[in-house]
Amino acid sequence: MKKPTPYTISARMYDVISFEWPIYRAGRTAAIDLMALPAGSHVLDIGCGTGLNFALLQRRIGPAGSITGVDASPQMLEQARRRATSAGWENVNLVAADATALGSVDLGHHVPFDAAISTYALSLMARWEVALDAMISATRTGGAVAVVDMQKPVGRAELWTPLARLACRLGGSDIDAHPWTAMPARLDAMKTASVRGGHIQVRVGSVPSATAGGGHFF
Image (cartoon, rainbow, N blue to C red; front, side):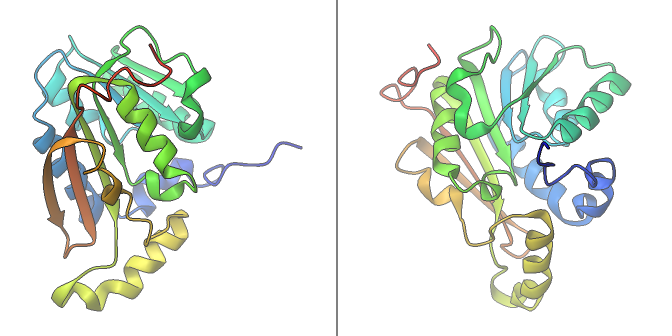
């Protein structure tokens, strides 16, 4: 019997139960603002889930650009597909794949991408560094790579740490993974944002020439 994914049951309710509007949308907005994508950009969205980044990206890239969303959960991708269809976004391509094993996956003809983003997804993966490297390898020289993820709140917001831990535990995330810490050694021109009491960390960097195209996508 096929093992169910973590979101087999919750996918349809994910947008409601994930605290998206009061908390986590702020990280998506901050990242996409820092990416400063020009119209017509082709973007890889790793761990796209139900497509919560899509509307924010569409405002930047317009119909001439494209979004390639990758997720390991068929149930989450179905919700993303419904979102794209309802909005009339014909420039969204969805790929069912493990982000830590993208080498054998056909990501379409926009590779290398102009940019790549992963929001609240790398901390779900035991081998998140492999997924980060795949994002970078699939992005052109000078392209933007953005990661949004979670840590324990800091300062006065530390009082919310138990709630933050519970939210991460329910979603299957490791709040202590801190995947953004690996980015400065891999990317140039790092930009940083910290929102919601430091609970949400945002990092955006550009792909150096020695890295882009160095993977197995080209």
